[in-house]
Length: 307
Length: 277
Ligand SMILES: Nc1ncnc2c1ncn2[C@@H]1O[C@H](COP(=O)(O)OP(=O)(O)OP(=O)(O)O)[C@@H](O)[C@H]1O
Ligand SMILES: [Mg+2]
Image 1 (cartoon, chains in turn green, blue):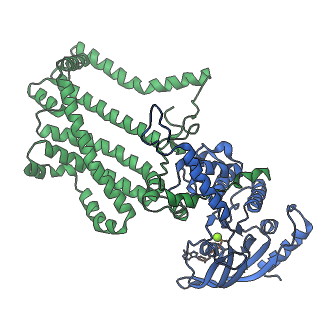
Image 2: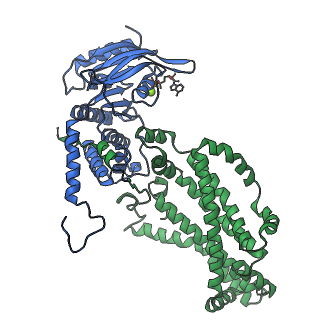
Image 3: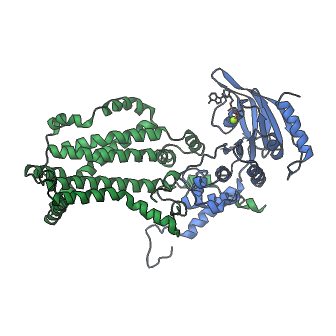
């Protein structure tokens, strides 16, 4: 029987398993060739379709570009006072000046480092708690209720207390940012782990997975879509918290730049700070989305996006 | 050991030595060839709270036999299968796995469900490799998985995501995953239940082929009496937690769909199940 000859050369897997315990590093973040990469591009070689594709790619930028043009025209014609709103050209000039002086790089670097370390600390705590409470009944009973209560407190309401505890230094900013990102990551990780398909968990146990391998092959990948939702939500909170805490007190960072500019009524720099926050926020979101699409390329819901 | 111009720090085992190592294991393996596990059930009972689902099942299945279990919905077929593969414990009686001489054997049992239960984030071949369990060297696992995939005629889909496969193809992957570790007992819980009629017929032949090739003991639960009669050496009717009929199917293989002798047996079974006998 040709169809099943492939089974007839047997090997003792169990025996090999006893002799050595190498890891089966099955890597789900590395999609199999020909599966994820071959998502058909809309309109490949079809003139009619590719025109509508490029049209739809530019369409979202129509409104902002028009607004900026009107803004510039209004400022140049003197309808908009410089004290209320600087002209776009003035903002670009402020950008250029600070870029050359090196101040911009320093401030963006400092703010970026604050945001990232807050995300790393708060995110890891939230992630670990979410995993622990998702897989362990005991851990869930010990901490879930407490966390659910704490998360209802708006973390920015803690500012007076945080200032009393840490003063107005770096620790205060780090604490607030960490606290802000902790809960969305916790909630979504926990939810993701709790909602992993029971049938797949049972399948994993049938095939002898337990502990770490069950986590690595079934629980974590199953919870990943939800974890990414938490991450993207946390990124929004991260920037928000940073803006607020940098405007309380700081001697470097984008918030500091905006605040000192306000004292000297340099509206162009204030607006520049807003633009930088917007760009950084968008950048973080794009990175998260790219990671998401790469890690979840097995999921049909992520296979046709981005066209 | 030959010393070349460059020696990798990990080169203390040469490829040839590694192959020899595998080969010696192979020899040991073929001596202790995978054994089909016969079943010996004595007074097996299962209750969930007040609900007594199985009420004393006595059953002997010789190693390598193909048994089909049919019965009304809710009569305890899935419950029995879960006991056989150790997913649940019986609340009474005992289940033993024996070879032809009555000696106890390790069943290495596997189960295939109606849903394929593939990991959507693993490629097809990695899903099959899951069937080998943990701690298998990756290259070895791949090779075995590819062999099993070829056995279900799905080699060309090895690198695809499961979401790109049809229902029948997914079920074939699930079958390959169950077979890759060469089980002594394979339980099938309505494995073809969700497939369309034509795909079903193809899968029935595939199941027969792999069973004849590998020689495991097969226990198939199905709603389709014609399927039971077509595939099995023996059909068991379960009714209210007891065996109400145990029927040999004395027909040679390959069996033809629409064989009048099989149709007659099928009619008899249906009468028993529906309570007309
Ligand atoms: N885990 C469980 N807890 C409680 N009751 C259960 C459980 N599993 C099964 N039962 C009960 O056992 C009985 C038999 O269920 P089982 O799934 O074995 O039926 P079945 O013969 O496989 O039916 P079907 O043909 O519809 O699949 C049912 O009454 C069901 O409610
Ligand atoms: Mg059932």
